Length: 252
Image (cartoon, rainbow, N blue to C red; front, side, top):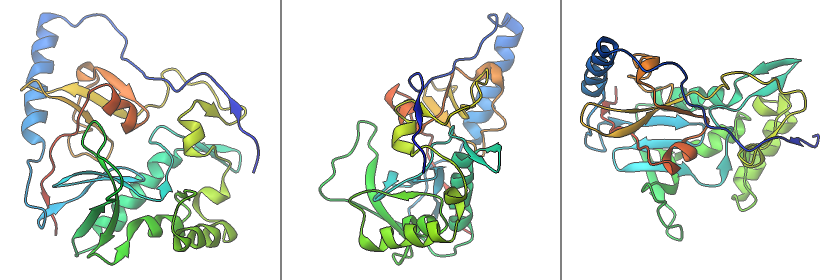
């Protein structure tokens, strides 16, 4: 692998433009009401389909879980493959969504006992389908995440196999997610204005400060005028006080 260069600190993007007119403000408020009512409500753990926030973070009826032992590219992160830029962060999230949506069994997440909850209540957990199929290990075997130094030996073996088979990230040039969050970028990473920050932050009709990710049902319906801030990682959104909407999509 190569040595990534250092670039300015990770950015946060805010929408530009003049203040909307009174009529436009009314329209935005109306849309926010629709978005708020469209957001799924909490459901019992055994019937709630987990939401995928990014490639290593899921949300179940009992909260947000960061998958222990792995690190996946952030939603705003890009990698270079065969000379072209790909959205490897979003690719990892969509791959995790496919794994969960194709399963008929429930996802069981068990927080690590030695890790305290974060300020937003999220936990570091091991998550397995029906308590047996470890989704972190699945992602590693597909080359969509990297194993952390303290990961179990089975995780490191899954990463080594994916690397040997040139799967996922291992067929690209990429900056490790932990370094990317510190602001490091690949050489010649093109400057894009606005930067590719896909997470949308907005205040709903009830005054809740929420952030939405591309896999949320209400994401596409949220107009640009209602987006108060954009983020490249859920950690940055949570650090600024934005929270996730409740989930409640029944498993099928």
